[in-house]
Image 1 (cartoon, rainbow, N blue to C red):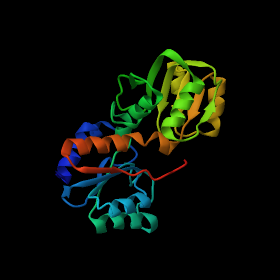
Image 2 (spheres, rainbow, N blue to C red):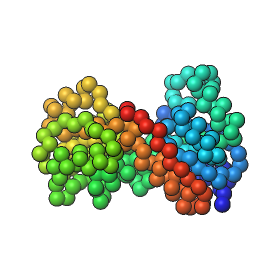
Image 3 (tube, helix red, strand yellow):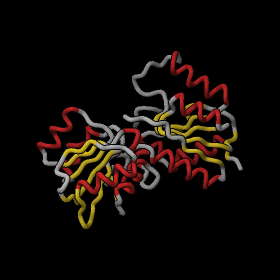
Image 4 (spheres, rainbow, N blue to C red):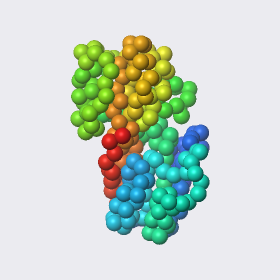
Length: 253
């Protein structure tokens, strides 16, 4: 079976509520390939290694969280960017990219995937009136030790996390933002979270966590953002009956 490129774009833009977001890049179809899609490859970032795998798998489209044309980047198609775009165009492969909309989807998104990895049963956006906010929150009803939460995350993500806090402390309230969300730590503390989880850490993040009495976990930008593209790719495959391959290009960052 196959799905039309433009039909897929319409379905995805609607499901992910693209028009509701103000983002740092264009969301949706970024590079136009052939009209019909039989084989879809998904991954975190549209790096050259992922594109080469897509060509080898005879993909018609690539779906990623990190695409191209970011605000402030060099607009010229030269060097590395030229090679990437040339790979797509010569192979007739479409590139779909969804950034914040894929972080925030309540069931298919990166934040929802991280919630399940923690073992949470319920979660929501930290600001119920702003459904485009990328910070989510939830609770461990019976409480869980920081060491148990970290152990589960490290098992699910297959990556060692950076941890600030007493491993024996009991956590009930948790907030998180996948990827590079360390700048939201003050908001998590104001919300009343006892633990804040994200992908990256900055120098000042450690001091903020310690001085506000907040446990903190940085579990990797790439590792915390595998969920969305994989889940969305599988959702597309099930809905349209096409082949889907999630390709994880290892990235320790």
